[in-house]
Length: 379
Length: 234
Image (cartoon, rainbow over all chains, first blue to last red; front, side):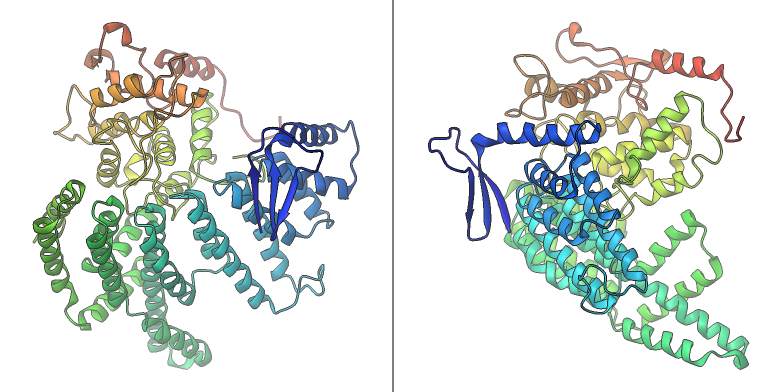
């Protein structure tokens, strides 16, 4: 489940350089300068059609190559061909990639190949396929769910191995967008499962950006669902006889369930998390940035600013957007008056930090934050 | 980036750069591209690799430069972009970081600092009265200090930060960043700001293509002689 290089400049004993202990694979460093050119050369000769390699040899050679240098695109591409021809099980590549990432957590080519493999698996899943390579056990939905969970694990591990691991967090976002389809459940699950992680990595800007992505997706989701709700209502009012009862009832049920997301509370919780971390770990710019943005989201009715941006740039269907806009503001206005409390609390928090902190950077961030509060919130 | 490869904002820049220099731009080639790039701008103000991703210096340069080529910079929120990029110059080191809370790196001397000439031009086109006529909106001298004092390898070549080894990529982008920091504007409005002896002054670089401005002019003139290729079979 893990690979690594053992620093060992000379082969002192006449024995294999491979070390396997408790499911962890080690390779003594002296052998790499012989091994890598050898396998690299073999693969290139194959590609140049100067020397034939059969499928098993190809699988072995590319596997060795990629564990030594996972950014070797050609090797991944050979494996793509093997997958497409049905000789290689795509799940093997997910495992190989996972192993490579234990030593090379950023490796761009590994993440890119991973997305290609996952795309293949999704396509396979959407076909009414039967027994395919024996990797089918559960129903398609269950399969996808397991794939998503595994990807979340792989990303989390890689993120822990390299600070602010852009590629790992980008992949995580991609998986949510393309495999998990950004359902409310998965967004909320991810918010709770990453809460501990970001508290342990307070300078990891990518980790906090991920949380912004989750919150923004939740906001967007709520607005979209409200639009559907309102559109259905409009349709029903105009054409009572055309009521597709099941459909509208279903959508309304979904919307009702999802409206229980309680966005203002989530955003408040995020602010609380920020304040707590800022207090405990002075001087981390990431936390202040995150705080800025979370407050921005909870103060300016998120639906309004989001929809306004969307309307300007994308030229969306304006009438339905405006309806959603109204619905959302009504909903938020009915909620307890959080908006006016938010900034006030923030001022108190910032002033407290300024008067008690001794860290120079913390003081600077706090001062900047206070200026921002005044300018952007106009209070 | 290549057939079967990843999709991100860099390829939009590569395509726009090549197509505009070689005069092969057709209306359909970049249909929707500008809007897609604009979607890559996020809440931080910078631009990520694809929509939804964290803002990152390299991707931001590619996005903005591509939009400048496509003449669609106005699709971005220039104000938040300006705020983000200026926040990336490091107070102590003088160089730039790639993303918030990360370390300084010599190559961002170009990717980040290079955004300021582009922004200057875009804001100027809007008639912004507050723009300087002599300086870019970053500390040009501080950046030059970082590059010249911290990013040179004694054996030649330039690097990321002290302690790292030299490579061609860092050599290229440290030098490009140095050129940006030394030259404001062009033609009548040219203002040189050179740290140290005059011999430190490099030739200016074109802020969109990062090659010498004369080369850009020559390439464009050359390819304008040829018609834009059509997709119809001959």
